[in-house]
Length: 335
Image (cartoon, rainbow, N blue to C red; front, side):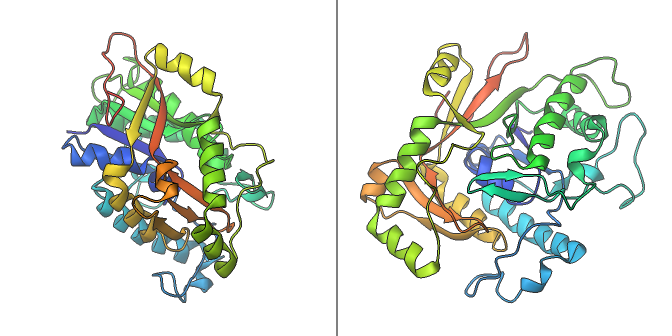
């Protein structure tokens, strides 16, 4: 049984974007599966003392070696979330063509550059990669898996890829196309048609700004930032792509197209999964119980390779598309 199928671009995205959803589904006995589109070959490497990334700086720039290590990190993170073992998109059979020999058609990380804190763009030095692959190369494979697993929910990024990474954007496009193909009787060779809900990860703009402000104002977090050389998001910066106007989300909620998942009951597994991705995620920490941060809805914090501290909020929020003729389902507090 599979309640949730999450589709992500790189190892660590499943935890940072949909970790609470996956852990909640697993804890409820509904089952959770993660499909990862690339192995993050072009990621940066933190290599911090005191973590499992210590001494691994040489992995940065060595695509095959970094890919192999990030597979290990992904395995540990999925174990923490209760989401099974890694499934890579390029290892799935294309129902239009059947299985390809292992390793002959890998989807590779497209790379990225930080445009500004919290916003990524394509790396002009990378001419190929997953983001440039024909859409149906990935979508048909994923559609076949959707038909086999028959999940209630397929979760991924919103159309902007969360913060603009080209592979995130492509993962969204592949997921949307896969759900169309999975429900289309004309797709042959991949089992019976199946329609699943599409859950796209978003965040209310006011909530994101309030969480960032609370994090930046906390004395203990500011002391950590000074000691570790970390920074905070500029309050004048535009919000990342996943941010949505509060009124638009309220309208979606009124229409039955919004779901929320409480993070607090699964905060431990989510932080453990973040720490498993030690080459990519640093300082994953829970806010002290009863603290002003917790009262403000900030359950913890972390930073990526850009060194910008980010809050772990109290909820994951999803925009939901419900296929015609199927009742909405829910995982978490938004039932």
